[in-house]
Length: 266
Image (cartoon, rainbow, N blue to C red):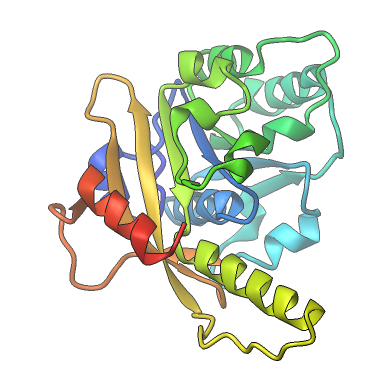
């Protein structure tokens, strides 16, 4: 049984996170990697599966507060060790999954850049081997290269992956972009510059609770890729939602991406 993302229109396109495969969720800082991972965690638990979650950034308490009260957290194992080595991660996965007693079918690693890797191990490839060995879906979160911050066009592409091994070894790569965050950033900069000049510019832009976002299926083994799906990012719940009144044909074309760039002034 594949592990669902919690977003039906995404699962229709990717069939969920598959056992024996490495899936990657990547984005700029603050564009929803952990939120999408937690959505899948909640869905897996609802499907009566247990989940192993390595959180190298947030604490165990911070992760659990983002999970709704109706979710059985006894099925969630969180390891919030900071700056672990890959060997530590491998040993933990091996120890917890060898017995199969906990019915763990989803392993989330949040995130790649916080793993100590002094020996330059190809971490994505080694994680893929573990996914095959233990018949689980492994979801690896990753930051994008800082080079994207110096581009006018901040939409993520495969070339923006910080670890180039991901593109080779991952079975599925999802790139996230909350387009309206760029407009907020631009307006805040204008207000700061205005203040420094002794002016009193107040942005007419009203920060939205629900922001338009795009999930870009950049790579998918043995299936269609290069697909962009519109979703909503809710800043109150810190999670993704389906757009209302859409169907499987609501797919964003390259031309529409260009229109979004113009709309948010990036």
